[in-house]
Image 1 (spheres, rainbow, N blue to C red):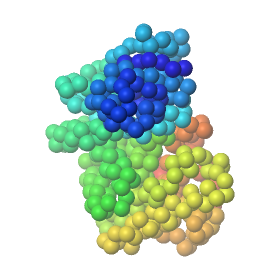
Image 2 (cartoon, rainbow, N blue to C red; image 1 turned 90 degrees about the vertical axis):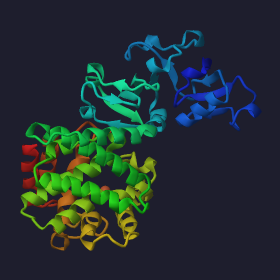
Image 3 (cartoon, rainbow, N blue to C red; image 1 turned 45 degrees about the vertical axis):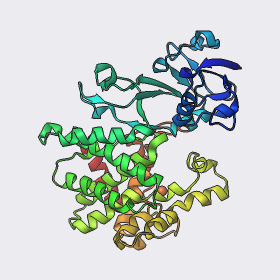
Amino acid sequence: MREKIPIESLTLGMYVDGFDKSWFTTPFLKHKFLVKTTEQIERLKNSGVKTLFIETSKGIKIISGDQDDEINIVEQPQIIDDTPKDAKVKTDFKHYNELKETLFEIDRNVFTKGSKIDFELTRKMGLEIETIAPYEDTEIEIDENIMSAKNELLIRRKDIEKYRKYLEKIFNQRKNDEESINFNSTIVRENSKIAIKEIFDDPRNSHTIDKSSKIVLQILNGILDNSLAVSSLLSVNKFDYYLYTHSVNVCVLSIGIALNLGIKDTAALFQLAMGALLHDIGKSTISSDILNRPTSRLSELELSIFKQHVSESENLLRLFADVPEGVFPAITEHHEKLSGKGYPRGLKENELHISGKIVALVNYYDDLTTERPYKKIVKPYEALSMIQEQSDHYDKRIFSELIKLLGRT
Ligand SMILES: [Fe+2]
């Protein structure tokens, strides 16, 4: 259906089907396109477009009112709420996948009541995105409503730097008492997620190793001196942004297990943690279409491409001359199994490095507990019992340390 809407109602995921200016007075070569970035909306506004047409069969439409109330879907342009701050954007899966690229999941626990932010907050409910705190030049004060907002909290990707500055500010004001350990850990985890996102976005960047080292040292030192808590450094993996949380989780759990196993050598701990953090960096080179499907639904060729992420991770890190050799086993062996049935080399128990054995188990556990659209959520205890049934694949001592570690978190 073709609808006329005011420019203020245009949002990501809508399909523009013409507007009120001739093409040569706007910076757009085409007047029919899917809105994929906020920059496109800004450019349209700056070029003086006031009203435009959208084709709702090719993109999302605006709805207002209660999220579950389908009859509130507004089909007539004249009654569209033209204040975007109240807009809920309902998408289908395909459009949501495009929209999510413009968003970044955050943790509401980083906010304290009365603190101020200078970026917009949105939340996700199923496939709906809703702005809950629009930002228009004046700072937003964090109140009860924002702190208790249900569902996943997201920011625009363009605002990540502002969010990072907010985290830095509150981390610098942190208290180092017993009660603040969980809060401080949450800030460190959020900051690590941002750094990992930047690394995955541009893994060949000359700062990749510096950035990774900083995260690893902060997490490792914090766990060693008990100023950070393993439980609050971990996050529940949501499928959309799982690569970032997964990398941090695998790093944190690997350090916890290594310490429980009695590994005290700080260089060995550091190298294990670096490998654990970067084990999946090679996924940044693989198409999201392959990564977003379960391996059971991949063709033979696609599966072999998926498995290449292990060698891609190694290749990417070999680009940097200063990565110690001890970092690599955690990367190259993270899909190997003691039984020899893993990949890429099918190594057996006595051929595997202790770092490889730790990261392989933690990686599998964290993958199992990641929320995915195509399977039911596996709870931690269910994941542990699934691993127990595969005792020939994973190291028993490491497994029992994982149980103890999770039991304490
Ligand atoms: Fe992997």
